[in-house]
Length: 169
Image 1 (tube, rainbow, N blue to C red):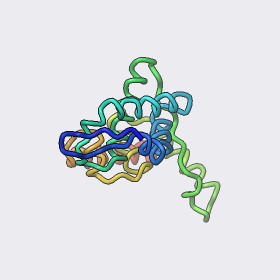
Image 2 (image 1 turned 60 degrees about the vertical axis):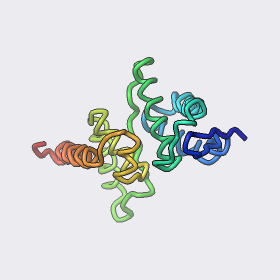
Image 3 (image 1 turned 90 degrees about the vertical axis):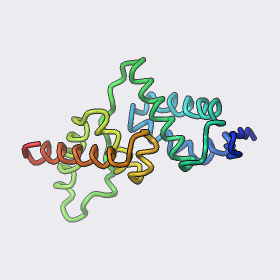
C-alpha cells in the first residue's frame, strides 16, 4: 500500500486508486488519443499521481483528480508524438431500436460532427456526454470556471447541430 499524505491529512492510496480507477482512466485516454496510446497515457497518469499525491487536497473526487491528470498526459502525448485524436465511437447500445439503419446513419453523423470540433469543445463533450461528468467535475478537471464549461458545451453543441443539420453555426 502506497499512501501519500498531504498537508491537510488527505491520503491517496495509489495502488488502490489504480485498482479502482484504471479502467475508467484507460477508457478516457482511449477516447482522447486512441487505443494504441491509451495504455501509455493511463500508466503515466498513475505514475504522475503517485509523484504528486501529496498535492491532492480532496477538493474533488479522486476519479475527477485522476481524469484531470489523464487529460494532461493525453495532451502531452499529442504534443510530443503528434497524435491525431481518434474518431469517437458512439455506444451502439444507446441506439434507437425503432429504426436501426437510421440510427447507424445518425451515429455516424454525430461521430463526424464530434471529430470536427476543436480540442477545447471536444474535451467538454467527451467529459460530459461520454464520461458522464457534471459541469462542476469538468470545471475541476479542466481548471476553468463552471460557466466556461457551460459555454464550451453550448458552443460545441451548436457547432455539432450545424454540422449534422447544415444550420448556420
